[in-house]
Length: 137
Image (cartoon, rainbow, N blue to C red; front, side, top):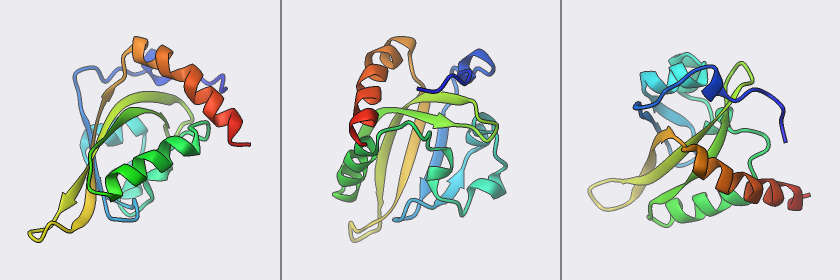
């Protein structure tokens, strides 16, 4: 796994929430100020980009497949995600993604909120993610 310094040693966002919205394909349609600060991207770099812009390359594909299967079926997904900043530092977030529905209950996009992951949750999930990543070939 990467030897890059985690962001939590460089930049703390404790007590803040990262919010983003995407269209059905995962392209960012809204990013709050905290998302910009934590990710190191300007809002105009984020809006219109795929949310994969902050996806850490060592995150297992299976974790995101499960997330997409869950949210595209209209359910809420919760999980730990390792993201990467524009400058290459990484950060772990406890994430909740919810479908956004129109008045006819059709899913028209997604909204995600993230808070800093606890050290305990990171330690509990890191080994699982490492194994999942290694198993994906």
